[in-house]
Length: 476
Image (tube, rainbow, N blue to C red; front, top):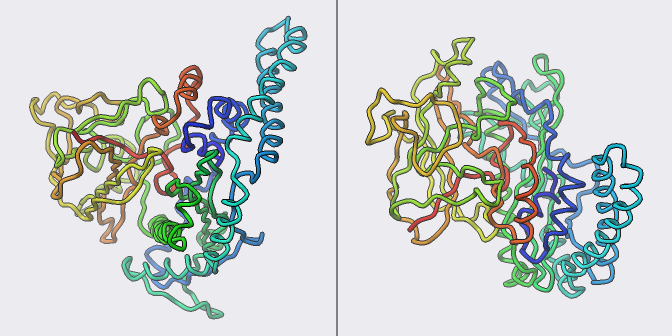
């Protein structure tokens, strides 16, 4: 999904429903593309086992890396750009409506295209002016971005190298003839995305790519790319205390990016591939609290509430039934010591992951059956949508939180399996929902989104957890 489309989901309420129309008409097709490389491991299993020495190489972007402040500075500039975008979106929407008229399409084009162009231009100008960054805030923020620049690609490479010993790897120098595995990393784009009008809200983001150059086993190695999204704050808050909040967001993003790169390269193991509309969940399915049934639909995205501030969380055990059904190579017979990782984040105001408040790695949990029902009524085990309680008798594992959470607060959570495959540590991907959560949208955008189909799903083999795709619950 493009950064602009994600901005629609994360933006302040003031941007209005016109922005939703623009994104739906112009950007929805961009959410459906999944690079073929997502279906193959960046480091083939044979190289994971043979190459314990790794050289991490900073690979600066071909274009000069510049911090971005995505948003127009000055009301006039914002209104003009907004009007142009709105007119184009309106014209395209009018053309699409006209084509649906069949034989009357020529008449419909003459009516709908000019009318919707004008409507789009007026609405776009209003949105552009309302979401413009003031000249003062723009100057201060750009100075903060430049001061924080340094060499982010080199810093990312340093952090990736620092994680290698935890994975049983040895950092090697890039000398000629060195047989070490080469892992190239790059920070391609970073900064603050857009604004929220008079409050000048902007959200931190960092786009990273990585690749393993061709080897005798992996001759074609296109780069992988992912974007990390941080909190949204007023520009004045980003710059307060000499940019303390901004430095914190940058540090956390670099640390998370280094973890995502090393996990993808050396730990994640996909047992099978699927590109269907189901399951609703990627990875292990949440059972209690259950997943949000329709997070991308404004009328179906109610967040489930747990019974206490120290809830017991239950989820699907590994291996899942679909893993067993697809195990044509009998890999699961070589899996031992299954454990689980669990993470819980406090939700930020936009509904995305804020501070990490609870983390456990290597939980040794024994499979059981969801309580209160007979074991012989167990569900099929496929990852289907769920209601407010787990399916009767469904196999699960459970973990009672050892630290209480805050009352009346929304949290995001995810889990994954950690196991040994032929004696080497591997993990599944973090559990997530296929659809993005849109409960944080303004009322006007919710009305529009309720009338259109949800965006196409991207599949379950993406790095990390994309923005707004976490599971969530609320404490009483």
